Amino acid sequence: MSPPRRSSLRKQVHTLLRKGLALMPQGQRFALYRRMVDCDPAPDSRLLLKVAETREELEACFKILHDAYVAAGFMKPHPSGLRATIYHALPTTTTLCAKWEGRVVGTISMIRDGVFGFPMQSVFDLSGVRSQTGQIAEISALAVHPDFRKTGGAILFPLMKFMYEYCVRYFDTRHLVIAVNPDRIEMYEALLLFRRLSAQNVDAYDFANGAPAVGATLDLRGVDQRLARVYGGKDDRKNLHDYFIVRDLPNIQWPTRRYRTTNDAVMTPALLDHFFNQRTQALAGLDERKKALLWSIYQLAEYRAVLPMLEGGEVPAMHALRRHARHSMLCPAELRLHGLTEALPAQVVELSLGGFQVRSKTPLRPGAVGDAVVSLGELEESHGRFEVVREVGFDGEQHLLGCRLIEPDAVWRRCVAALESGFTAAEVHAY
Image (cartoon, rainbow, N blue to C red):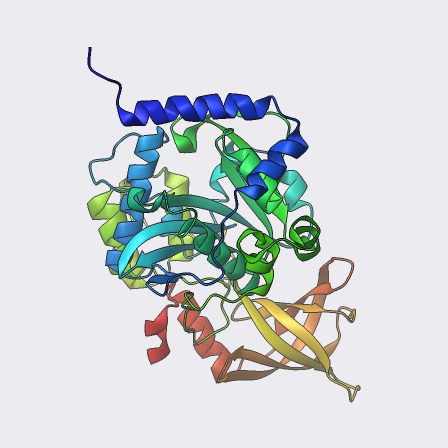
C-alpha cells in the first residue's frame, strides 16, 4: 500500500488543528491567531507591490488565482489555465500584484459597486451595509504562489496592507465585504476585526464552485481606534495597527495618475479582447442583459469592436441609460456662492459632463448658484458655474449634494473625455 500524499497529510493535520481550536472559547482562539501574526515592518527590497496593469502581470495574476482555486476546489480547471472573471473586465475593479524579483507571486482584487453589482450579492444580503453611508468594495481573488505560502506572511501581509491603503487612499471606500470559506473566517475576525453578515453560512456558493461560504464586513470608519485597542503595546512584528495604519512600506509603487480617479482602469480594448474573448471566452457566455450593460460603460468604438453583440446583431438600446455617464473621483474643491465672499471647502466625489456630486460640511439649499474651482488632477484645475440641484444624503458630518454644471470648461471636458475612454492608466497622460 503506497503512503498517503504529503498534501493529504497536511489536510489531516489542519483538520485536527481546526477541531482542537473549535473546542477553545472564542477569546482564546482569537488571542492564539494574534500571537501567530508575523508582519515584517521592513520587507525585503526584492518585494514590489503595484497595480497589475500589463498583459504579463494580469496573466500571471489570473494564473496564480486559477491554480489556487482549483487546488482548493473553488473552481474546475479551465482550458486557459486562468481565472479571469467578468468582474475583472470592469473598469470598477482593480487588481493588485506582489512581485518578487520581477516575478508575480501574489494577487488580490477590489471590486467596487458597478453595473454587475458584487459577486457575493447573489447569495448574501448586503442591504444592511448598503443602508449605511459610504462606498463598498468587495475584496476578492486573493492568492499567493505556492512557493511563497510558507514564508510567514512575507507576501500576504504586505499585499493586505497595500489593499487596505489603496481602499482608503484611492478607492474612496468605507466598507469592505468578503465571502470566504468557513474555515478561514475566524482569521479575518480575529486579525482584521471583520464582522459576519449573518450567523448562517451559505452551503453552496456558485462563484466558488459550490463551496460553502460565509460573508463578513469591515467598517473602515473608526478601524484605527479598534485596531489600536487590540494591538496597542505589541512589538513591531505582531502589531497590525502599526503595520496597517501608521507605517509606510517603501515596497509599494503607487500608480501615477493625471486625474484624481478612485480606481485604476487598465483594461484597454486589446487586453479586454485577449483575456475575455481569446483566452477565456467569458464575454460570449454573458446573457443579453449583461452584454447590454457592458455596452453602457464601454462607449468608445475601439471597445465596442471587441464586445459581444446582442441577438440579431443589433446595437443595444441606450434609452434607459443616463444622459451622461458618471465617474467616481476624489477631488478637492472650493465652492463660492453668489452673494458670499467666503469660499466653502468641499470634495467632488462623482462627476459627469453635465454635473457633479460634492461633499460639504455646509448645507446648501437647492437652487443656490455659485462658482466652483475643482482640482481634477495635480496640474488640472477646472473653473465653472454651478447650481445646487438637491441634497442626496447626510452622514452625520458632511452633506452629499447633487449639482448641475452650467458650463463645463475645457479642462473639465478633457477630463471627462479621458474618463469615458474607460482606460485611466499611465498612457492617458498623453492627453
